[in-house]
Structures are given as C-alpha cells and as structure tokens.
Amino acid sequence: TTIILSTEVDYIIVGSGLAGICFAEQLRRRDQSFVVISDESQCASEVAGGLYNPLILKRFTLAYNAAEQLDYAMPFYEELTAFLGVEIDQKIPTLRILNAPSEQNAWYEARDKRGYERFMKDGFEVNTNEGIEAPFKLAEVLETGKLDTALLRSAYKTYLKNQNQLLEERFEYDRLQFSEGISYGELRSKHIVFAEGYGLKENPFFNYLPLNGTKGELLLIRCKGLDETRVIKSGVFIIPVGDDLYRIGATYKWKDKTSIPTEASKQELIEKLQRFLKLPFEVIDHVAGVRPTVTDRKPLVGTHPDYSNVHVLNGMGSRGVMIGPIASEQLFHHIEENQPLPQEISIDRFRSLWPPQDHN
Image 1 (cartoon, rainbow, N blue to C red):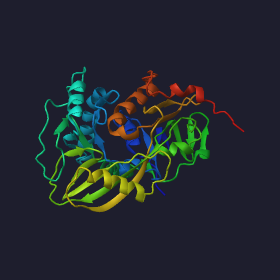
Image 2 (tube, rainbow, N blue to C red):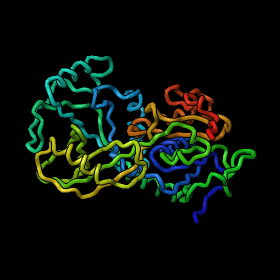
Image 3 (tube, rainbow, N blue to C red):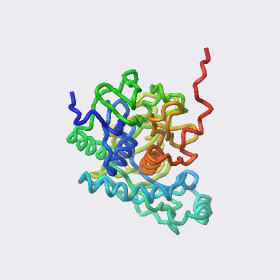
C-alpha cells in the first residue's frame, strides 16, 4: 500500500488522465496540497492521438473557443515540460487533403470569417508526396501539434509517487463521508474533484449528467517510403510517430462502450486510409478507448447541486488537449473564489436532470 505523506489535504482528485493532471497542476502551482486516486480503469488519455487542432476539418469551422484555449494551453504545457523534464509537446503542421474544387472554395470562404485567418494558411500546397493521393492540393491548418499524453501521464505519475501523492487503487464511493469536510478512509480533505473520464457513469454524485461516451479506435502502421513528418487528414488522420510508423485514426462509435478493439473498426480505418494512401503498409498495433463525450459536445465542469465540496471536471471529448488546461483553471477559481463558470461548460445547464427521477 502507498504511504500518503499527509492525511489532511486541500483536495482529493479522482482520476489521473489529462483532466486530473491539469487540475493537479493548478493546485501544485498554487501550493495547495492534494492526493490523486487512480486505478487505471479508464484509458482514453492513453489511447488518444493527442492532436490539438483549432479547426474542425470536416466543415472548416473553428472549434468552440479555440483561440482562447490555445493561448492558455500552450504556455501551460511549456511550463509542464520544464517541470517534468520531458518533451511532451511537438509542433506538427496539419494538412487537409482537398477532394474537389468546391472544397478549395469552402476553405477560402471560411478563411474570410473573423478570427479564422490566424489558423488557416493562405493558398494551397501542391502534393509532392508520391505515396499520397491529393489531386486538388492540400490546405494547412496553423498552430497545430501533438501532445504525448501517454508520456505526460507516466512522467506525472512518477512525480506524484515520489511525492507520496498517488493512491493506486479503485475509488470506492461508499467510503466517502461528509462531516466537517470530506473523509475517505484515513484521508481528510476540504474538496474532492472527480476527473474520471467515462468512469463518471458509475459515479453516484454525477451519473445524472448526460455523458454518453464515444469509443475511438486507432491503428499503428508501418509504411516504408511514405516519409511524412506532418499530420495528413482525409477520411482519417495519418499521424507520424517516427521510424516509418504512423498512427491512423480515429473511429467514432456511440453504442459500444468497451475498450476492446474490433475487427469492424480496423477494416473501416484501413478502407478510409487506402482511399488516399497509395503505398503498402502493415498494421502493427490496434487500440481502443472510450472518450468522455457529452450530448452537446461541451465539457462538464462544476459543483454538485447538493454538496458544495464535491466537484466534477469531465466531458473533454476529443478536444481534451486544448480544453483541459483552461477548464481546470476555471474550475479552480470557481471553487476557491466563487467565480462563475462559463455557461457553456457549467453543469448548471443540466440542472433540470437533478435530482434523477425514479422511472419505476
């Protein structure tokens, strides 16, 4: 069993994925004491492609609050890199294959909108990579990159273990008691923050929230001769890993909530890839995870309607790398200074679902 340095802390954080780490960082940078409890049951951060990209490439629309999120996230990850001593952020250009002249026109129409030209390069690039089919050129999205979420998690957990701030065990909700703050076993805390990804479905405090979860699958392929160092997007993403290895993703499945890779999704990824990749490749690995997604595609952030010291940071979906840092800061200020949360991310928007109605 882990020896926890202090049994009295300011915060307990449940979950050590990207959301949990972002919130832990808000606390560490402000000298707040905390313990993280995590049992590895949710692995969305482990299998994430880790891409951050301000533009939704299907329709050339800016992601919700993209500029504000990136302006906060980039220095946040720089500081994390310096603190942990590992390179977690890699700046990589992202190019979208254009499939018809109409898509070229759509790119320029979007680029004319206010705030868009910062993230959309003027002009198109003629394809010079013979391994890729792109007869109508490529368009480049600016300020994109890839966060190594798996490396971030392992480095951060090593730090927490060294500080005796990590309890590697399954969180048991029925051990939580409320009397002068919060107690959980030996631990006493002022606040608890649940950042458990799709595990929220089992959480008796917040399972009324409409977290539906979207399963995503990724392939790792080896493709000799492709020699591509940028992210290429058509029906799927090609994400360079190095040594002729590329991640291919991702699928979006709403019914299956397991983390088990499926043959059907593998075939779907291969077929979409073969539409624009002209070289032979071999599949090296195939992983799956459930993204914590919400019906309205915005995060779930806030304080429980009945318990003023029970909080949630969840629902980051496929844009967690961009949203996580700023949402964690907004939650911190909400808890400590009673600052209102932006309406779009606050769980107050689902207040009508509380208390859950008994349908029997």
